[in-house]
Length: 126
Image (cartoon, rainbow, N blue to C red):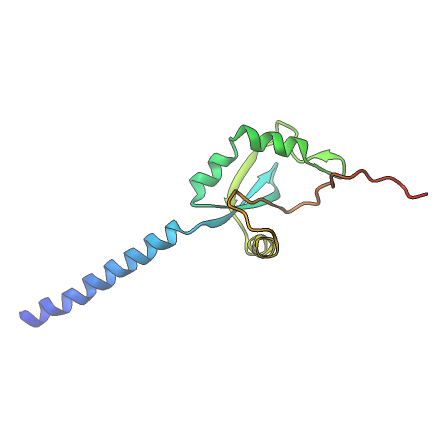
């Protein structure tokens, strides 16, 4: 009887260790993508999907998306659906590359997946 109790203890410890490992993974940020009208538009880090989805309701983000342009067209028209989801592997790779090559930041970092018009005006050279 004593040996069966002894065998049960390592299994308990293993389950507890696996649970702790899962909890640690849940605390690590993950990469998410915001789709604007089903078009992958930007990636960012969040603690979980709920936090990522909440970002889609932030007024400041909607303003930024409405002001940012791609080929002269706003990234968000004020009506299209904004949807957060886990980033696909290639989107995660693009985010990681930008994070590793960019300036260190304590704030929220977004990586656009679409070409965003620059802040300088494009004028023909004469």
